Image 1: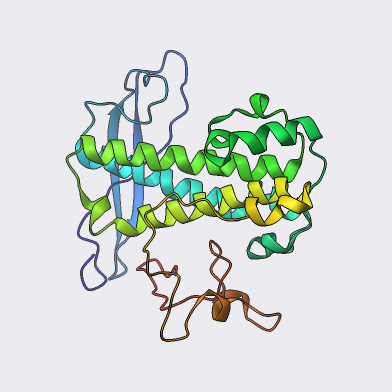
Image 2: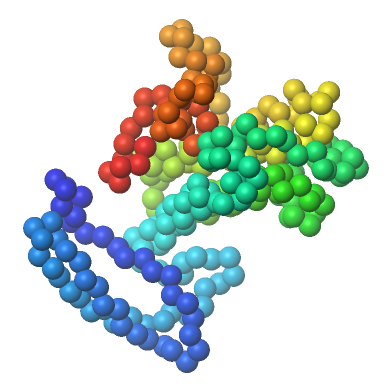
Length: 258
């Protein structure tokens, strides 16, 4: 996009399989910045079924393949920020989830087994392997797994496409995913700690998925995490939905999202 004008783009659509249908046509209508209306018809062929666990064919155009991988990331973020299960558990809005009461319905033997396993091992367990029925624990565990899988897939797809931008211009994507994974792992470990008060301090500490700066714990300008904790009077728009803290040096993207 240059000067508000779109120079090019890709339409991504999820098509449901229909028996005996091998091809079709799509009609597009759009309005350009000068108000003129345009129409276009595109013919397409249904590709073979994807291999298990894939979201794009290996032979797919590299630009489209990257776009599909990034779309999966955006789709999961959208699902995460609007999941009605957070509200169903008594959260008036998603950023307030950290203030919700912790569940203590985890059986003692299951709790002890999970504590001994640790956060990273818990993350790799399926819901059946966990043996937990606590809804809050399962919700945080589910999203920690989903975001971990998306991060790994995104790295693999970008590498396969010869794109190294996740380490440069798109590094913020990795940082966002890593931060969410940290938050969700910390949440389900805190729920375990709530069932064993004497171990809360040990288990509630966040488990880092990203490199940590050794100097990050100190600050000479006074702008540390304690000063960024929101109060009851802090507007919701000032609070980061991932860290639950007041934004520091926020920026607005081209789509008006912070």
